[in-house]
Image 1 (cartoon, rainbow, N blue to C red):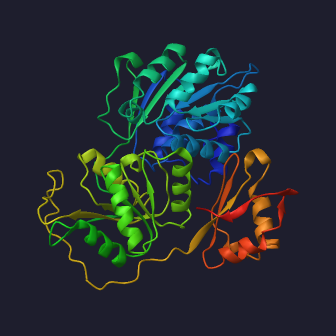
Image 2 (image 1 turned 120 degrees about the vertical axis):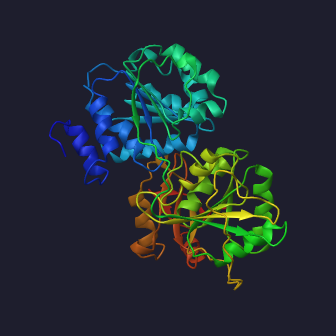
Length: 441
């Protein structure tokens, strides 16, 4: 690690567990020292979040209070992911998130003592700027992460308002996974330094297969495929919410453990679906393209295109959920007897034939335990692990992923033991307080 970087940057890199920075991260640290405007094109999973956060730690830290950096993102999930990465850096600098579905009162309390960094969705950030709970005059760096998705989701008006509040930041950074993304005139980007790390090449560890149904019925084909493929985290992509719900009903009737994810759900429902998917409680997630961008989910083994992507860029983004960081993954394209291979996939004309040997659907190894207390109740991972070992009867290695939100927490535990654990913890306290502990719905 270069000694030219600030102590905070070197500490952050160490805390993130990086042996070396990748070329994109190195170049961002270099150009951000002088460039006023930067456009970064890089696929999800390439370390892009660290690439735009690390330069914040090499900026001079003055005594003047106020928010120094603002990251605007298209989704609540992405805001929470970026917050987690920043906290993992261990800089000691305060960070807050603001997004729809989050309690405004909680956000205002968090902003009373201005954090160094605020991350949020366009509408909620604009609200705080209007109310004066975020003071724009102190903001030095404005980052529009996945800016093309923000515009695609209809946030142009809010982002335009944010830029009126912060018309001339010392530094403006725009990031996108899509090089073809256009920038509206009101952003006033002029001669930016462009860092292009996008690639049209298929990752080395990615295998693409076409499976064709003997008739128009792709639902039964999907059921067969899920019973035959190797166990692992699996994303099933559809173009519409209605298709997600229809497929979910089929899988439920077939006894296949899964969950659903789309923009029609409340934030709490979406958070729970992602938590259970990440921790393996529901290893199959049926989703719209809402999950094709901005979500950092490690270890996805299979991508299934139940419905064909509307464009090549959407196809690529869907596939980008797997075979990341030199790992391996398989993409399955499901076609009915009448569907044709899309023009952007001319090389995949030969269909794969399923073996026909039906097996039992994969059974989730983990189930999710719900705690009715979280960060605002001063609950930490150490408290939860201690309780599960001392009172719940679990071994440390049996405890899976732990997610602690503001007022609740979720823990992956062995599915075969979860009812026993709940019974053992029925009358127990955590941090000397009686807390609801149950199987997460």
